[in-house]
Length: 244
Image (cartoon, rainbow, N blue to C red; front, side):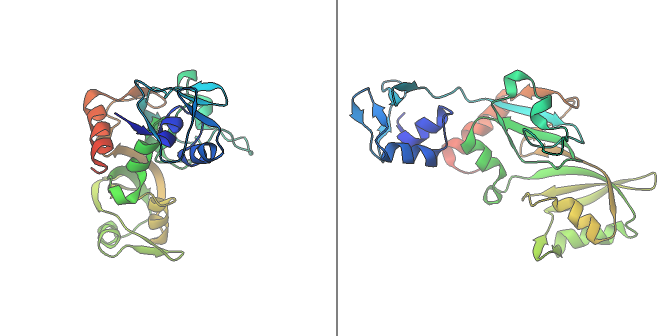
């Protein structure tokens, strides 16, 4: 299967596709050690070689993991204020991957870790409609059913932005509050917390439990696992079809 040259270069991990296009335009990329590459060129990974300023590039093996993020960990490599960061708790084998679907500092639950940029984009971009399920422990909302109906039917406008859930339901009453489940298809910044705050509620705990076909199941906090075969088939499906 032939690949566009910029995609091949990006898969080597050396830069993004856009940066690869710049390198190609600058005449720094050779195909088969002799041909100066041009924008629009494609290569067969099984036959052709690609080099950048004398360095042979090889696409990295794509890797996919489910990670159970703890609360009070920032999705970042380093924080100027010294807060605990994701890459400080990931093992050496996962330092080269990036996360898909950010969770805020206080939130916990499912993160996808991968070095496949195209898959990460498809998983998180609103146009693909990937559903994300969250469990939320909250208090101080007097009429929980009214709140749930509002975020499903009308949504809540916060700072000029419409915040709306795909679905929502109460699971149970808990000490001092309620346990609810909210399903989102977008990932707006702190969306659930903002909806709850707009109704004078307070989030006690927020946990993402699923993201598309990916689930935490019994994965312990701070642990990770590779995708199973069913999950890998999903990756292939959206790569082949460009949609879910």
